[in-house]
Image (cartoon, rainbow, N blue to C red):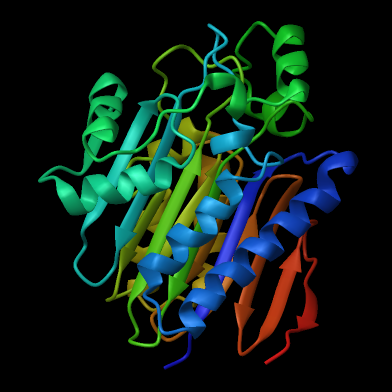
Length: 310
């Protein structure tokens, strides 16, 4: 069975000074996740590994590179989903956790629930032995500086994603050697968001979805728009109806743009290993690995290829 790993580092107007680090980051995460698959690991293990790598990379708005809310605090959201069983775990508005995707997996595997939020999620993190980290370790000096400059939440989609002020989500999808698919998505949200604001990322069917009958999707972009169209599930619905993976993703992103004027991106993979990375924002850093070949891009219609060592 063909194994495939696809990751994204967020769909937004990535400035030139962050472009190389963003591409390098998604390439490393994709290769790391693929190594898990190559070693016989599950799709679930692979997407968690890839997303953790991006949460640990300060160039991305997740974990250690997160943005600040109106109170100057970090609130994190994440989801993970297993396409074999439809089991899912998610956390929202959690604080002082370096790898929220792993906390989301603990919710999936150690509770009867799908989503824990805020104080409850943090209390659960303590019960499973997940260490708290100081907020300062999750925030870069660059973010502190930008947060000081922007005190008002930017509600305009065009202003947000066509500016270089926005930052966004990370995500991963994979299919393993058994044909099982999985997805994971993680984010620090949007700079100067209201306290307690939750976007699409931890919401099943919006920020991500995985089902062995159709595929796995991880979304990125304007969270409120993605929520309105339940983008991840919408893409899989079109795949179920016979659309090619790339066509389904592109069609649904265009629909979101036309219907609610929302920009974004998505990565998707089918159980047979058909995959895509699509976006309607100015840029999206993405990478994919299949057959020891690394594919990656940043700008629209960009698709570079590197042969990996066997």
